[in-house]
Length: 395
Image (tube, rainbow, N blue to C red; front, side, top):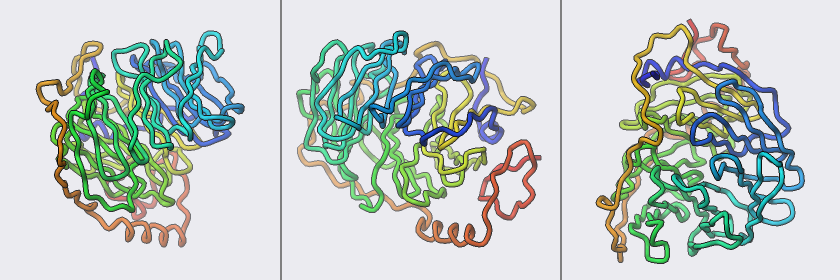
């Protein structure tokens, strides 16, 4: 049995455990496919945590490589991580022996995205600041495919591992069939977006019906991976210094969570963008990384601290049967046109529903008058006037 996620359930998440401050702020996090382990990457180390016991299982120091991103591969017994100190290679680390088993070279600048292909033990992709996207097979030292002519690319696999989405700047999204990467994209969508908001994260919803794009300008939005049409925007949070703040879906694709300034977590309904809650935790800075467990009702947020969030033990919830392992919904070949679009039409992208610049200035004036203390979720909030819309207070 598992908790049915609804508005009330999302409002009852609280910090269950906090790990002490790390040497560097977290750059990347990823749960294993079974949800039992969590990989945390920063410039100094790769750490593996147990999701069930909420303890650190192992830590591998990375001062010689300064990784920016990392991900699990090969049934979670090995980890891929980038390097930025001496070169820009990708290294495969065996967690049992703590030794590097293979090095993949090709990128000319730092790597900002690594992801393994769902359903495959050997295939993964990488996107770099050299405007290149590579597909690799862990059994070979050279890449198997390359996608170029992009600008600040992002990339993501769909939940079934059949399609690959790539972006170019803030203007275009391409959908590729992974079995025909040498051909033209199956779909290409062109957008007209405010150039001030850089795209920082691209991900499929767990049901494969939406693509979520995060920005560094206090908003994120979703589009359809079928026809590229705009679906919904998610706004109202603050990114004080234009940091790339991560967002994440819940496993049922109903809700979207995003980190924000001052350790807040914002939650919206994915379907209509309704702001469900603003949670305040123990994080001391902007929440740069956030991930929801794919197999359990919990999520993790991180800045300098690593916080595990779970529903309150005395909460009232609806209970449902768990999905079978690997059960998911994704769009298939029948839904995607295989012919390339010769002249992609311009799709206007609406601006955020709030004036983000005004919001940031207002928050700055507020913080200049009084510094908000870090609130322990076990204590009651005293000053309710300082709470944001939808923020959760303790009873």
